Image (cartoon, rainbow, N blue to C red):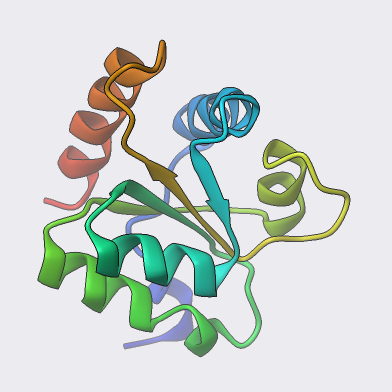
Amino acid sequence: MSSENAAWPMADEALSQEILDILQQGTHSRQVKKGANEATKAVNRGVSEIVIMAGDTTPLAIVMHLPLLCEDKNVPYVFVPSKIALGRACGVSRPIIAASINSNDASDLAAQIRQLKIKVERLAI
């Protein structure tokens, strides 16, 4: 596998923007866990709805345990092109290589997150 497509599935520009918007809203409602360790814990605990990783993470190997874990736990995952944009969407000024949007049925975002999961699952086919 070449390093070109190691970060797969990669969201296109429109989907990336949608993901970052939902992340931003999720951050305000405290539904987002930031960082690879927090995302890993969320998936392990079964509270993660979707995992977002940065495709420009170097080395990419530091997030590559997440797709395997997600597949194990049936959690959709997707890459966005930029860790800086991912950090910004999560409300911090530093780059973030992974984030998890966690479930909260009472949240206003529940419907948007469901839609997003469907789009991400289509990418992975």
